[in-house]
Length: 223
Image (cartoon, one colour):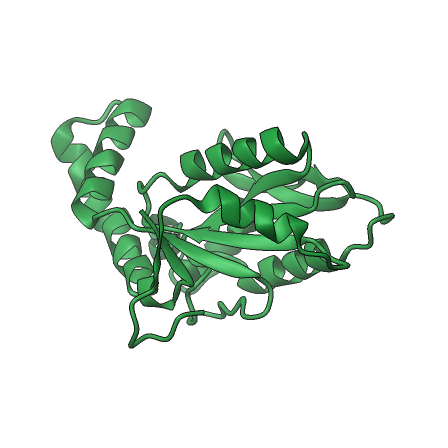
């Protein structure tokens, strides 16, 4: 990772670097992290990158995984000292299971080529809780792109050092990301502009500020 007193280099075309990682001999899978503000477009970019890699290297060579499946369940949040605040701030770093994520990344990273598929949890938005084994990572997968907010975070139990071959930061300005979130909340919930802005201010922006503080720790910025 880059040190906090140096600016990470800018990566304008990540696909050749991903393909080079695949060509480098080694006994284990390659895992790349992609971090960015909420609303920065991490999921969209991750899907595009993996599609480009699979078009070049063969279908099923690379997959995208998200960290949403490591949200703490609503039942766990309800047992916290202040359940109302925990539910209101869901999506903040302390409302995830970072140790569980680290353990699963370790299993994905070190699985032998003839090992059975490694399960990865998803998130069921209709019930608002994680679902174990929603994704199965087949032995044929050689490159995993993990996208999420807190892969570079180092508080609240988060520490993924040594589990990612490299970790990039999608460098989108804060105001752009927050505008996208306002539009997203309007579309998803039928909110007015004022309601959507209030929701963003109460949680999303606070989380975005936490993520932004990890920018300098990235190995590269994706423009």
